[in-house]
Image (cartoon, rainbow, N blue to C red):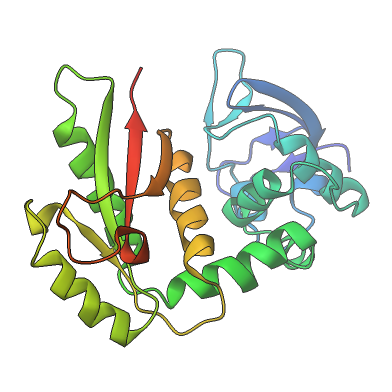
Amino acid sequence: MSVIEHRSTGKQMSPVVQLNIGGEIYTTTVGTLKKYQGSKLFDMFNGLPKLRTDSEGRYFIDREGKFFRYILEYLRSGQVPTQHIQEVYKEALFYEIESLVKKLEETPQIFGEQVGRKQFLARVPNYSENIEVMIRIARAEVVASRHSNVIVCIVRTEEDSSKCQDALNTLDMDKESVVKFGPWKASPGISDLLDCIKADIEDEGYKVSYSPHVADKGFRFKSYDFFYKFVFTWW
């Protein structure tokens, strides 16, 4: 058949369609888009397309269009991308192409992120919430300044947690402004967690660095045991 008939309207749609994905234009067939039953694309083009059109009549999907080429190549030939893995993985999740999701999860980039890093961070209590708190504190502290500082207390064990609390009681500052991470039960150490915190804050678009916190004179505990200073640079 050269055309596909919509059951609901009796209208016919050409099997060749144009897509506008976030401003990127693609031409393909309905059969290609419907290759994997259960995917979001299958649902979009199964029957009357459930999409808006742009001024040229192309079906519009409000996503980053740059990486759709890799989705389309997989639909056409089954080729798994070897570049932009993280970005294509996000798009495969959005379009719910289960077979591509599974294949990408076997790549070193995604496997390390999913199995290693995320499972580690899942064992750090309130990790995501603490990242949000750090950003809120940094934003509140930046008043006519190029930098703002956030002090974090990182404890690896329950014993360190008690020592950290004792140290906090000696600090000449608002203890509520110190963000505490840990303890956790996993092999990665403090430096690994610090790198994760920095990376996740930078993923939010902020420029940040960290160093051991240098305590004021007379501080009873070694500052580098628990405390680190994250510096947000705004301009």
